[in-house]
Length: 153
Image (cartoon, rainbow, N blue to C red; front, top):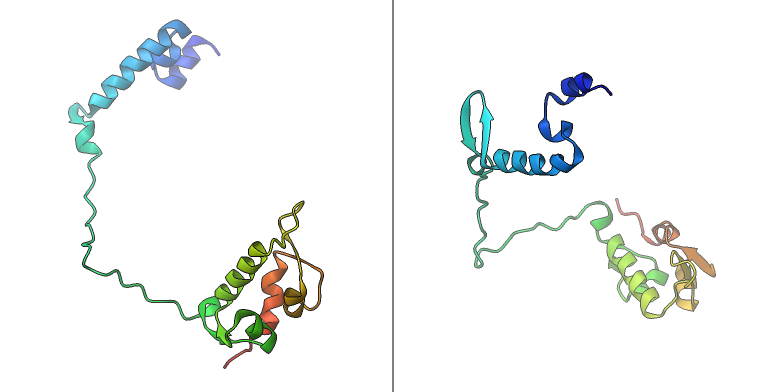
């Protein structure tokens, strides 16, 4: 790239066109100047005034944050099959809670394949839920659980 082409491309930026030994010093000088003042249209504005943002309102410790629990889709409590109810200890639950309980059980009983953590070795309790399979992939868990949730109108 010739120097005139480089000058047009970089519009005379001295730090980019300077030799390597001088580039760092001229770059440091240009950045320190640009941080202290920003020139636009002949007026000078300080960078501190430009970067000010509105302070966020702080929550008071005595004001409770109200979150409404979701009650649709996977967060909706549904009746479950007798096999899943026996495993979970409850006749009605959400899909997310059921998956969390199964993963808690798998991790506490060390049923993950050490070579492939995405694979679960099923013991007798899990075989009742997962259609008698010896191994289940982690993506299959929700698919196999969907048969245990009774559809409600």
